[in-house]
Image (cartoon, rainbow, N blue to C red; front, side, top):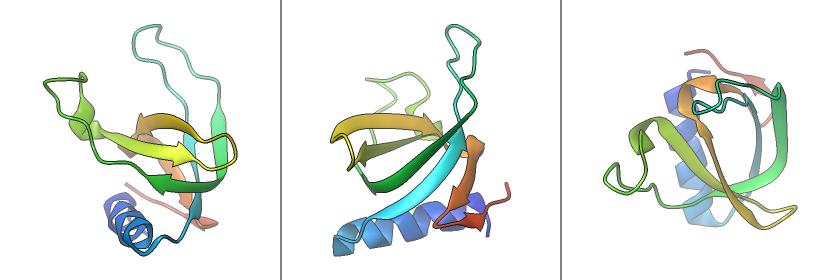
Length: 89
């Protein structure tokens, strides 16, 4: 499945109140470091932020981790899996 098709499906599931799982490669651009692959077993999306408020917001996926209820984000191009399906860019 293509990354942006998966994101569209994530948005649709979020609108329906259905959580999903996904995995991505972490990357901290300010520190130029990664902590490897992050698996989020249950999440829903949050509204996207504005690029005026958050740098590079158009390239980030904003979500709530339903295990911790923390608002989080990741880089869209670094998504690897959606509901156990491998993604490609």
